[in-house]
Length: 196
Image (cartoon, rainbow, N blue to C red; front, side, top):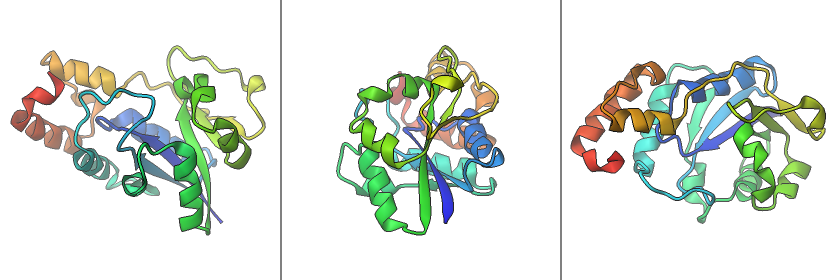
């Protein structure tokens, strides 16, 4: 069975921190491959300033083009919305019986995991990998048996920070893969209002 980590998010936009987490889960031996699951709608987020679904997918594919075993999926685009994580995982299990799926989430999401739709079903049926986030300390001892803390560096970058930098006319190049920055800059020149 192939161990596939599902790392979901709006990726608005995708950045180097996302890629580092995706690779770390593989390098630490927790999964064999990571699928970046671009989400068309997050039930817990107000969808303001969201880049178009197809464009976020395009940026993610550009970002992962040369990274082994890290791929991008639009699987949630074809599910009913809102696409709750438990539905996504269950549908993936049906569609890919040769894979064992686990969920990769940030410590910020783990802190509010009990708010997730059918969170107990996720815990009971799927391993969870939690990566560190600034301001959300985690004690390994307190984690349930099937939840693993990803031993990786803390990446102090977020899509929110990138959007704010771009709105303030500052460079975000240090956080973005070169191909992503180029494509994003061209898009924002044509659609400046989206992040204003």
